Image (tube, rainbow, N blue to C red; front, top):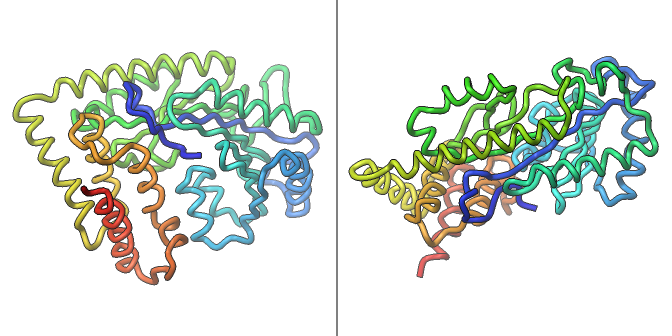
Length: 339
């Protein structure tokens, strides 16, 4: 399942929704204090019900760094999870957008990621997985503190709900810093494309809750949904304010970006993300009509370094070779669409 929005409605600012639940099993120390035997024991225990429910087991100890990074690029695991040296396994239902990371900071990170604005559905999906595991295991829980987690900032619900948004007009207008300050006042935060510690790229941002203690799951979802509505209204207002010479210059930039994607011989991933943002903005403004959100979103995933390398018949051996391969992949796809 694609993790990005493929619709062209007023919600084209919303790319995807994700709900993640942090859970730990009673009777085991937190992951940072576990030995390998304990880590493998947890993986084996949770693996049985998950695999019987249709999850595929992916042992990251058996993956190359390139393969592990590809799962980061597809937003199924965190960058931290991909580089762990301790036992860690991903249980994945790719078509449904459901995943369980076993052995990260917490014993389990249960995640549902869906295209578009679908926070309620993502929460229901993650909760179903949690309830299935809760039938067999006792999660660490305190009546006073809620679910016990490795990091105190996750105590309580242990839930992080987030929405990936595309905000080119607010970004161009220089409003994102003040937006981040406003969101922090109501317990929300702004992160980059790949979550905590990553920078913003291509006008794409993750808006998520910061507070998990003393608040219910329903309240988190309500507060986040209301903020997304307000941010979307501000983005739409900023887009409508682009007129006259400013619109002409933006149109030229978008058309140049479209042309560069169609004809460039070499392209870095960072350059592609910038061009991606311009062309996606062009689709939203009706300036680009022969490329869909879905097609552009597929290119975004397939052109990322690790995923691109894995998909190549002959894997590129140098960064320059990879940039040539990326440009060729994008060029071939877009030129095939020309009348």
